[in-house]
Image (tube, rainbow, N blue to C red):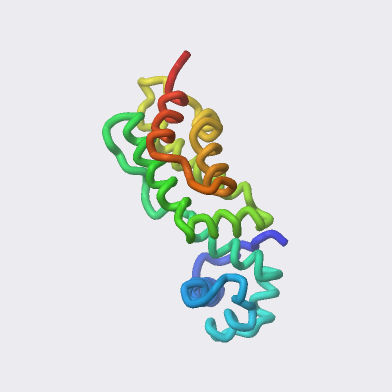
Length: 180
């Protein structure tokens, strides 16, 4: 079931959503995610379970919605003064955040949701912000950066024993920035 967007940016709906999101975040800090239930979330948020089921459909969709909210960046990518520096700073932060246990859980929740395309939209927007800073340099396309830097990073985070080493991440960035 797709995650529904509120028809109003504020009001009761936004307060209920924030209360439920807060309950999910608190419960995930207190216990294993496999033991979290909709009735526990509802009780913590002060709503009925039917409120959660009506809005999200099931627990997996709610967990994905909370994960997606965490993925939304709060600020523009760091400006270092160079394209390579900006991409490195962004990629290092992404690697660090997403290779943590909470980051891996966010990735798994989003992967299990009906809205996996949302992640690539967030990443593409961040990378486009960086690329747009350097119009005189003929930077690579955002798709090129996603294919050569982000994709191997995500693959290693989700499917390898250890994430990429920062030095390997830098090599991928160097390859992506070559204009052969």
